[in-house]
Length: 201
Image 1 (tube, rainbow, N blue to C red):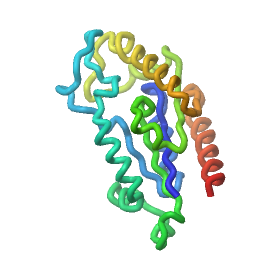
Image 2 (image 1 turned 90 degrees about the vertical axis):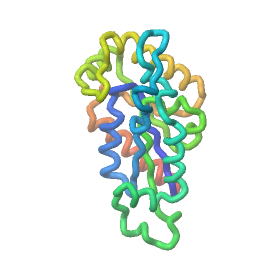
Image 3 (image 1 turned 180 degrees about the vertical axis):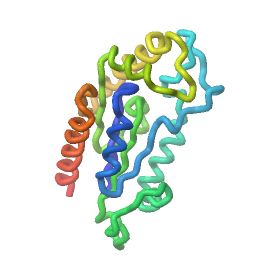
């Protein structure tokens, strides 16, 4: 059985932290990070707001990301091995459909790319208030540092725009409160995933 989990949400909301905890405890679990698909800085356009448009879908090579996900869907065992993921020994059974294989797709714009929407069996969305987001972002070191005013002038407005678009898609999302402790969020999601998997067996 293949099961694909989306962990989306606001920048600096705790998506990667949650993902990293889950991949250590879920069986045969691989991950695709949307951040790995950013285009090169010289390919990022400057918008009307005067900032390089990092927080929009065109800043990402979504086709390459979709191809990576399709590679997992076609052969999760091969994908796992090529990404250094240790599989449970039962994965070597003749019928891989009898095994549970999980893919976590993590990123800030997962639910704004129509070809990707139907891939998920479960969609989580982490949110935190504006001031907390700004505070967390100010402590992060990015390869391309944030220029002054980027958060107020581009990052937060784009987050609000994309969240509204996502909510208008009428898909089911499970909202997570990013102000809860890391352990609390992890326990909530882990338990939910286990229940969902049991219901599918």
